[in-house]
Image (cartoon, rainbow, N blue to C red; front, top):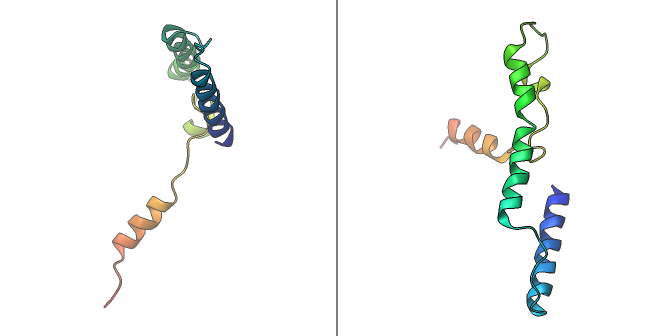
Length: 93
């Protein structure tokens, strides 16, 4: 997660510098970025199709067989579990 935050921070800083010097960004047009997103999503299709046609039963969990998520490891929310636990057991008066 730190790498993503550092990347966006540096990108914002460079954008501000470009704006101050009134220089256009050399970044690719939006259509190229959409193409890159398509590549990332396309990488997820072959393992999914392979899993669908796999007839062998595995002892491992389906989640453990999956490739890493497109956007990296997803955050885990522990605060929500504490909130729902406290809602189930209200304090005694």
